[in-house]
Length: 271
Image (tube, rainbow, N blue to C red; front, side, top):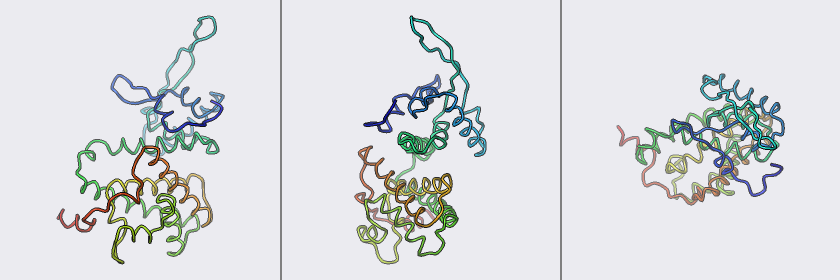
C-alpha cells in the first residue's frame, strides 16, 4: 500500500476477523500492510512498544497479543509458514498509538481504534441506560478527565486561567466548526451562569469526552511544550473528532438538540 488516497477508517474494518467466541481480532501481518510498514522486523518493534504500554496500564499482554503461525502462498503453488500475531482491538489501539505519527494512515488508525475501543468499553450495562442516566455518567467522567486535562495542559505551559480558557476554546473551535464556548452558550440559549457541558445530550457529551481524552493523551505522548503548541494540538484533535462524526454521517455537535433538563436538575431527580 503506497498511498491512502480515498482511504478511511473502514480499511481497518475490512481486515477484522472473528474468533470462535465471536470476538474481534486482527492479524499483525495485515496491520503491518495497512500501516505501510514494509519490513516485519520494523513493525515488531512497534508491537514491542505496544506490549510494554499494555503491561504498564495493568493489563496482561498475553491476553491481547497472541503469537500464531500463518501459511502464505509462494510461487508455483507452494506455501510457507511465517510468524504472525493475533491482536485484540485494544492491542491494535496501542500499536497505532506507537506507530509512526508522520503517516496519515496511522492518524486514521488512531481515530478508528480509539472510537471503537471506547464503544467496546461502553457496551454492556451502559448500553442499557436511558438518556438521562447516560448524560449523568458521561458528564461525571468528563469532569474527571477535564481535571486531568488541566494538569497535562499546565505541564505544557498553559498556566493561568486565561491561558486555559484560550486552550479550551481552541478545542471547541476544532470540534464545533469555529465556534468558541461563548458561541455555543449563545446557540443553546443559556443564561450567563450556565455551563454548556451541563446542557448537552449524551451524544454531544461523548464527542467532548473523546476530544478531552485524546487531547490529554496526545499532549503527553508527543511531549507538547508551549501554549501555542498546546492550543494547536487541542484544535487539531477537535477537527479530527469532527471529521470522524462527518464520515459516520453523524449530526454535527452544534446542531444537536439541547436537553430540557440540566445535569443539576437530573441529579436532583436521582436523589
